[in-house]
Amino acid sequence: MSGNFMAVHPSEFQSPLRERRPLRLAVAQFACRTGEPEQNAAMIASRADEAHAAGAAMLLCPELSLTGYSVNPRVTREHAISLDHPAWEPLLERSKRIAIVVGFAEAGKDGICHNSAAFLYAGEIWHVHRKVYLPSYGMFDEGERFEPGHMVSTFDTPWGRMAMLICADAWHPSLAYLLAHEGADLLLVLTASPEGGLDADFDTMAAWERLNQTHALTLSMYVACANLAGEEGSLTFTGGSHLAGPDGEMVGRLPRAIGSLGTFDLSWDRLDRQRELLPFRRVDELEITLRIGTRVLKRRAEAEDRPRQAQRSEVEEIAR
Image (tube, rainbow, N blue to C red; front, side, top):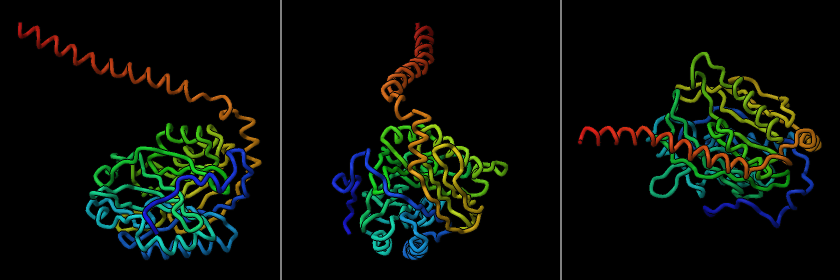
């Protein structure tokens, strides 16, 4: 396999108004092993076989599930893998029968490392997303481990137009909003949320559910979330993976803290009806958002510059 991947295969599918195939989505949550991509790949391949046997056409796995989660910058860089690493082989083979979405630490050129997600389909790495927002709060310090990505984009599949975000990306509403404007039918969110990641009293997965239900309702799309579950090293991940429907209701969820595999059936009729009821896709104008955003940036820059100008005037007065 080469290190190249395809973002969109326009000749393979119809226009954005195409008829979408029915989709049964499998979501897997589990604990993985840090720095053992071949073993993690074997476990994911087994989940893919189980999901395929249950009639699923796609399997969603959590953030960094192929390479393992680590808060140590050295460990992360040592165990990052490239797009032509042998660990991909069993997953690419499975992707000829079932699409697979998996997170991994991606080794780039010159020692650069990204927190990435790959969509595997038809024996290829179909699309890659690199995490844009790297958290530096709570127990997280991903800026020490990764370089940020610089873009988001949708991609076509036989089941509709999709997009991927990784954990903190989803907490920045602008990214989901932009993906909705690119026509996303299903937003795939890969997370690694441990117990006490922000605060011992903060229910992370309850917050994730509210966030993803809000994205689904206000942006007229399905939102699926896969979170790590169980123990890896000193961390315990909370599980609670779920699918939110375009009406904001929860389609289903997996148990807290334990490994599990669940399947959910997406109704495109339900999605289309909701888009008729809430006309975000028809009436929201990205140009207005960009125009207002430009003005906000200008005002903020002017506000930040005023204290500097006052300071310079004070220095000049003293000098005189």
